[in-house]
Length: 246
Image (cartoon, rainbow, N blue to C red; front, side, top):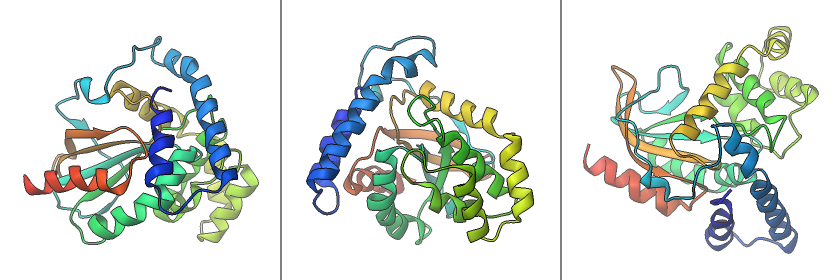
């Protein structure tokens, strides 16, 4: 994908701490794998799209966020939405290095509402859809964030056995959880979320939208997109601007 090479440069230049040689080599391999899958991803939305600046694609006037898991303020009119893949290496890097700063600065202080939407890429991470299904099944038992925070792990790590272990770790009813995952009843809505992210112009994971949120209608009016695993300063710039104009 045309954005991933930029993600690598950003991650290595601005990520917290220094990457080892093996980490750099692994990231290069991840980039090549992502590039190789660009054609397949394009087919999911009816053919290849020409490369263009992310913000050049017109954003919808509003996005319905009904049912999206959230944390932070229940009343804030500023929101950050993340579309992510639990097995994407750049999503994992964002979760481990940048998300803690967002959590501390904006979510714990109830300055914004943070919401999560599914964006698994089957061609790259065929087991990731199972992880997203497991997260939805955890919602049924009121444990979404407990499960979510354990799912950002390397590709291929979301086997039924591993997910069952995570369910037990967070106190889910094991039989109900296993039945929910086996039924695969959330995969269709998860893929709809992926298709929606693509319709917004996303060409890689993770993908973020900063916008004005109406808690009464659950409608998000997009202001800016952040197309990748950028440093915290990028999020700070756009979130602070939205807060200043709320």
